[in-house]
Length: 398
Picture (cartoon, rainbow, N blue to C red):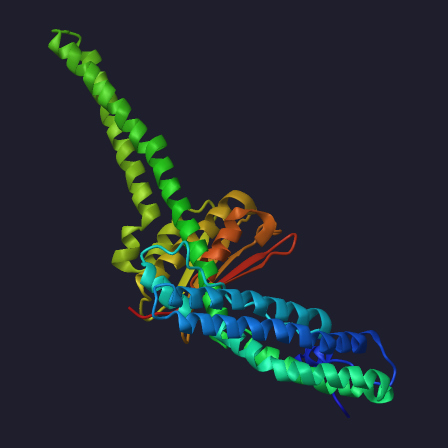
């Protein structure tokens, strides 16, 4: 008996992406393929003329100061031709090809003109596009002539001819105009992640500045004013010792509160217990500040690098804050363990549930922070609870 594949099976997904078989009838996709073959010639002519012009002008002027910059600009222009060809393939051939990562040269700090010029001249996307446009002319002439002849002479078998010719076109687009594999994808991801990290760091700096301004700084200002008033009374020969003592006592209380706020702020930046004793002790300390009982279980035989340890600590800290403020839970637990080269964290509570990534900036910010270091963040929180948040980070040894 043949076992049925589930709906999410890769085989079924692959089948859904396959093109329907060519037939003697002319369905819509066949007419699109014919249109693509007939437009091959004008597009090939445009691309060939562009490539020959850029190469000849750039090579001929290399003895001058404008030769290499002209060639680099020509490679940038070739990227636009490649984008047009990918759009044509998507529209007429149903070929889904991702766009390569952009070559950003204008706003890159720390590099000079020669470095920018070198990056432009060594752009692999531009060179592959120029190679595509250069070799397309004979193929464009051939496909245009054969398709046009088949429209009047070989009408019954035209769908089969069109399918065979466009399969070659699909192969050429995939081979020369698609992103260069995993490297291009990772570059695009790292550029996006870099933006997330920069935004997160800026938000943290704003929070620290706000906490200093509204907390410890304000208390220190009050302390200075109180001590100044006490000093004036003493210098004026004021004999009310009880009043001066009360003012000094109040200033002493402000000092203690300012010191506590500075300790809390320093703990928010990077707690000393995490540096000195590791993740187990630091998470136990965080759990004591939660408004519900929290059981902490950490099964770690070594410590990861400080950056991963810090992200894990602040992830649990923020999740437990959410438990205290929003969950209505009576108990919670934190489990941390290592599995091969991954650090896994699971935070559970028996609260009301309903937590979502799109429910606010807190959860979404955690997910973005973990994604920036190749981590994962998953929420399972049905209405009525319980809520289980699983975070996964790469393990990197110290």
